[in-house]
Image (cartoon, rainbow, N blue to C red; front, side, top):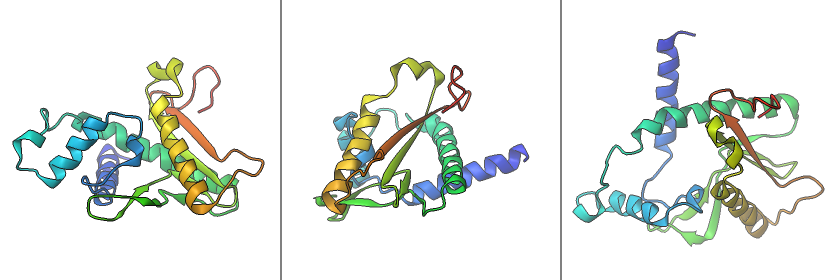
Length: 185
């Protein structure tokens, strides 16, 4: 694949993810992270002309967009691997809503499990991280994110684990794709 077609595919992936994201909505993936940052992101989306809600660095996280798209590519590969090794239904970016928590526009707050395997009742969260973070894993707010969704599965869909784990947190290292010591994700 040429560099041009790779860049094109990444640009299309970014465009697809941006269409599904309303910046004025609460992001359950932000559980455990800075609430103030989340508040200002939502307020800036609602009132973009208000100086008090303007980000100090408007392009502050723009440098992470390539890393985020690499994460999407890794996630897609993992979905394909699940589909090849498991014959049941596999869902990607499944909408998991909480009817008890509403966004400012009245819509339910919605989380998006990276991979949901209905028959196994397994929610898989995929994270791509730097190899330098290896000794700090799992990251607390990543665990919080998965635990929040497991609570929602239990509370709203009455799902309980039945002998197998109800959730998996999978880390891929951006530089190597696998743990250099174990040769596994």
